[in-house]
Length: 111
Image (cartoon, rainbow, N blue to C red):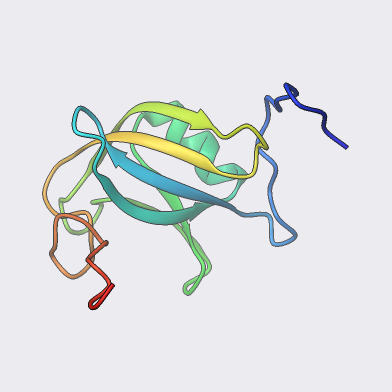
């Protein structure tokens, strides 16, 4: 069990070998999207500086913008204190969302 002040220094992947990734726009702090990485996606992201994710629906790695041209150049990678989530700070070119929107997040109606 971790005590207060303890931090992990390596990602903790879930039972599927995945870790959630919150993607944030460099400079503005705007949250763009939530995606998933496995160890290989994280390794490639760190090596290339281009955001690479794991597609849970297709079961393959994908580089953001590879087909759309809407790329994410990685500026920083941060691990949360428990090691079970990643914050990816990027320079987004074009839309982050597959719908064509700049961000995947919208207000939740009557909240």
